[in-house]
Length: 176
Image 1 (cartoon, rainbow, N blue to C red):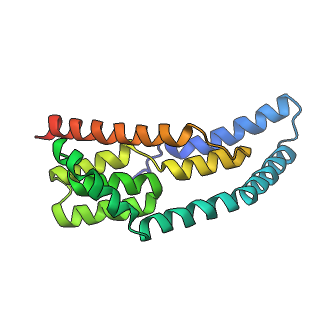
Image 2 (spheres, rainbow, N blue to C red):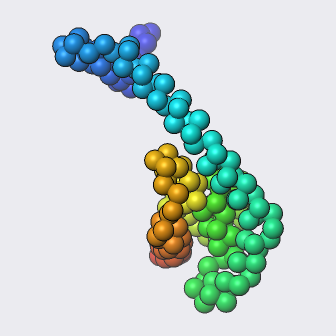
């Protein structure tokens, strides 16, 4: 039986050949440009380590101090009015801080309620529509040396809250 060859197995070799062909045609020393880019990438990675360390420490302190639980308790009247499950709000808050922690929370929701339950679908939608706002701000702003985030944090938090509301609305309308 003949082995089937898919297009996807040819994409990387074709792209690499196109890069080398472009280098030959335009007289670009491809390997030197590649190593220069790799060196700049390593320098950027070293520059970002303090920002990454800072955001991970801040997130850990925020989670372990009970501040997230306090936020859920304070926002409880609002989430009841909007019919948002407390687990979903908790997941939304943690998602702005830490992707791996939010993923483990989503798996816990799946284990408790099931992936096809309302809260399971809501958790999946939240994970796809929100992002780790503080991590992104630390990385992107840190990579270019911006220390004052000004409106980025409030706008990021508002975007995450809008994603929470949109997720609740979409899951209620599509799956109930």
